[in-house]
Length: 128
Image 1 (tube, rainbow, N blue to C red):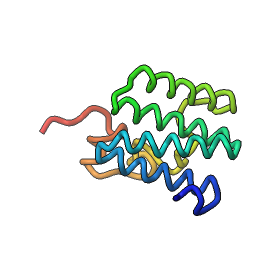
Image 2 (image 1 turned 120 degrees about the horizontal axis):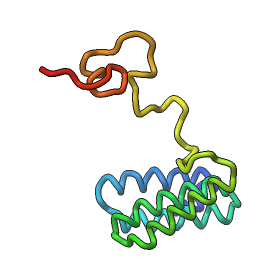
Image 3 (image 1 turned 45 degrees about the horizontal axis):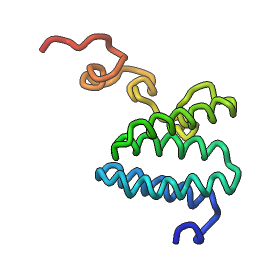
Image 4 (image 1 turned 90 degrees about the vertical axis):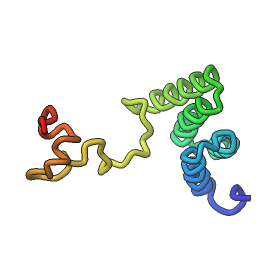
């Protein structure tokens, strides 16, 4: 149904968003089915970057099914595809440059004490 409702990459993005929600609910098999559809759309559209993204996401979900050998092979295929496209890291290029694992580092000035303890800005945690 989604496949016919919009431009191919918009459909892929909608499917991958739904997969993320299913993943949070532990509904891995349903997510695998949707990612396989998204992967097919990427390949038909010829979008290799999104194909690599979908392969990596599919690999992660397959580990929850669990189908570990297929999960590993799928992630490796996605990483190889991204590297062949010139991405230096194996991570998905969808990560925004404004996203950070260390949010306290993103702003100038001092962070709160709690943020300092939970990020890399203040060094080791203080004794209480």
